[in-house]
Length: 209
Ligand SMILES: Nc1ncnc2c1ncn2[C@@H]1O[C@H](COP(=O)(O)OP(=O)(O)OP(=O)(O)O)[C@@H](O)[C@H]1O
Ligand SMILES: O=P(O)(O)OC[C@H]1O[C@H](OP(=O)(O)OP(=O)(O)O)[C@H](O)[C@@H]1O
Image (tube, rainbow, N blue to C red; front, top):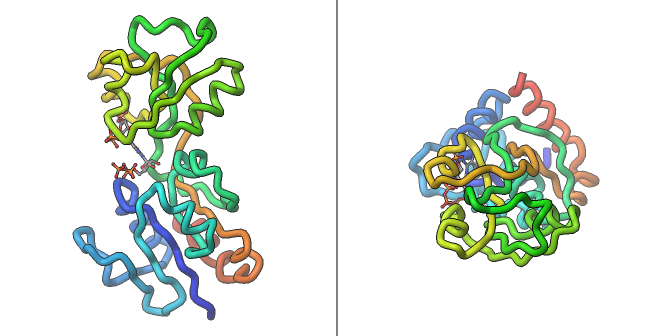
């Protein structure tokens, strides 16, 4: 059988994804939590697993460097990649929200907003759809700081437990989208390696039951 390359997001969802793969009967015996290895194979040699930064998974899959990928919906929306999203793996659940300080006026009253985010495309799309002009400031972390120090009116960021929002005295002003980990597929690979990809999807579905 032909080999599939699977790009998996390093970081907070990696371990639960590997657990799901194992439940689905897909094993990478050499993998362990602290390993620095980036490429693994299953014993059958039908799957090659590559570990990449979450933000890069869509690029690997869109370019065909990987046939399939496992990545958060947040990165799919931000990348705008031309790929198929075929399965919700229901891991890494969180949401995209707009948050501001207690003094930030209601969004619908805004004439123009400065929005800080790790996800500027998601922010643009959300406010454009509502006819609210914005300037985005791209940050790479500690986004909640931006409205606190007056750098931005509000933020578009991930909320999971809500602790970061609460502990920094911010308030959620709107929810944008639910996020979870998804299986994505390269469009050409789906045409040429249909059976192998379908098999992985079926296995994952059984692992989810
Ligand atoms: N509380 C959360 N904060 C951020 N991401 C979360 C959270 N809960 C679940 N996720 C999911 O986990 C994915 C990977 O998160 P992780 O923080 O490891 O990657 P990252 O954004 O590349 O981190 P970093 O830039 O700090 O390396 C996110 O893309 C998102 O889908
Ligand atoms: O609702 P919570 O459970 O508090 O989770 C949400 C927080 O977690 C993420 O940050 P992360 O830990 O990745 O750190 P970062 O600021 O470096 O992006 C995210 O950007 C929020 O800040």
